[in-house]
Image 1 (cartoon, rainbow, N blue to C red):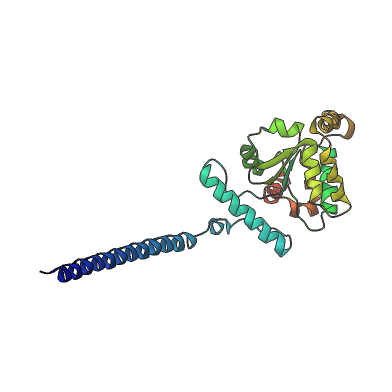
Image 2: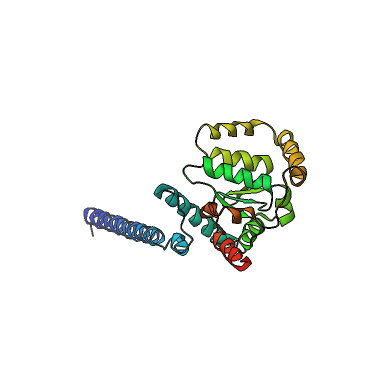
Length: 236
């Protein structure tokens, strides 16, 4: 074999090896990209947890408020997957308050009248419906008797003066403007709240039963309305 023939044979082998290497690289990249695409597609087609809460008690708010609530419910369900002890059918923007306190009842009535868009919901502390909200926040009834509770959403709740100002932020103007007082440090706001809260029964009175039972037209804004109505029927 002369030098020219030897050179041609070596060049052909090198070209064959290069083509084989490129084909192998193409097959690997194509298969790898297809696997990633298939995995991404399957992850985006999983059933969302919003279906789980389709049986929740419907809100009487406007359609956009219902959609916002459903988003919050979905977040709650997703969060409960990480925390199995957390209930899955809790509603957002719920005020849990002392239902036998005359001052608290007046405050609730005022918020209902001001809340034209029906964003805020209510629950009497004395009802069984309040229990899962207390568990969610790690609070006892005595804690809420001292300072009322506002559950704004999954993992977000407030008490005392901060709860009151956060509720105000959901009301239409001019009431929502009062939430600017949140800039005042909590150690300055809460002592005023606590001073009034400790004396509220002496100053404003206390009822034997939840006061909302005397004004049943307000019950449509209460998440424990069925329990309240049952209690009212059993008392007759």
